[in-house]
Image (cartoon, rainbow, N blue to C red; front, side, top):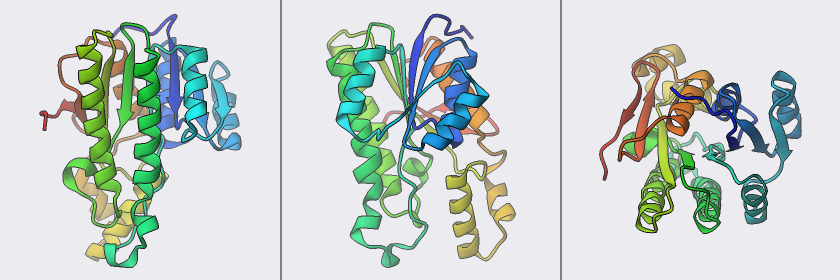
Length: 250
C-alpha cells in the first residue's frame, strides 16, 4: 500500500467511532488531515492524541462549511463519515420526523459535499470515500429510514463516479458499507436493541456478525481506498473477518 505523504485530506464526522479511526489512519499514512465535527470537546481529544490533525468544530450539514473547506484545503482525499444517530424503535413507534432523520441529515450532507467535490472540481487523482452501512443491503427494521438513506448514499456515489468519468475529471467516488458492529456507540445501541427484540444477550446477537468492525479497521479500509489503485467497483462491504469486499453494481 502506498502512503499519503504530501497529500491533504478532509474527514467529515471525525470526532468519534469509525470517523475518528479514519482520520487517524489517514494522518498516520502521512496526509495533512482536517477533521470536521460538531463536538469541540471530542475534536480536542482527537487533537491531543494526534497533534498533527487540524480540527474544525462546525455543522457538516451547512453547505457553506463544505464549500469553504473544499475551496481552502483542496483535498486529495475527501472522506464523508458523518451522520445522525438512527432511532432504535419499530416503525409503529416512530414519528415521521424520527423515521426520516437520516434522510434529512446523512443524505443531505453527503449531497452537499459531493456537489462541492464535483463542481470545484477536486484535482485529478482525488478520491471521495463515503460511509454507507451494511444496512443498505440487509435492511434495518429498528432504525426507521436509516437503511434507505444509506442505500441512497451508495447510489449517490455511483452517480457521482459516473459523472466524474463522463466529464473526464479524474476523480473516483466509492462507498464503504460496514457491517453492524458493537465497537462503536451507534452500533452498540443497535446491537442491544436487536438483541432485546430477539430475546438474547447483546453478545449472542453480535456474534452473528463475526469479528467486529473497529475504528482501526475502518481507518485501514478508507486508507486502502484512498491510496491504492482502484478497480471499477464503487461499493465495498466491510466486515471484521474478511475486510473489504466489492459489491456488484445494482
